[in-house]
Image 1 (tube, rainbow, N blue to C red):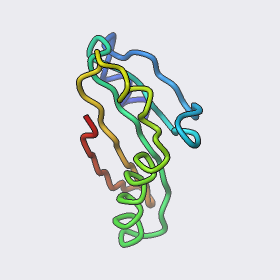
Image 2 (image 1 turned 90 degrees about the vertical axis):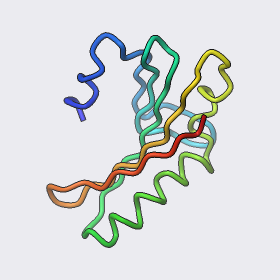
Image 3 (image 1 turned 90 degrees about the horizontal axis):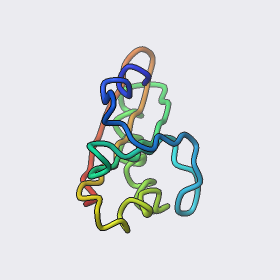
Image 4 (image 1 turned 45 degrees about the vertical axis):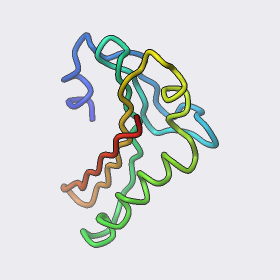
Length: 101
């Protein structure tokens, strides 16, 4: 995770971890690209690839249902908002991305 976030360099904005958002707590959320874009990431752990493939969709749905991206969706200056589900199983990972705005 640290490597992924550091790849944004000085374009990474307001990084928040386990931040109160919508109807719960978003695992990771941040703005980037001079605060024109934002990303909300939901992390999960699975026991196998079948469960990981199922849980990645649940992660995206959780972001939507619990309104974790509300703060970014309501800002008119933010043009792009991504919901990202990351599910880890063993040393592997399944990723899903959905554009919310």
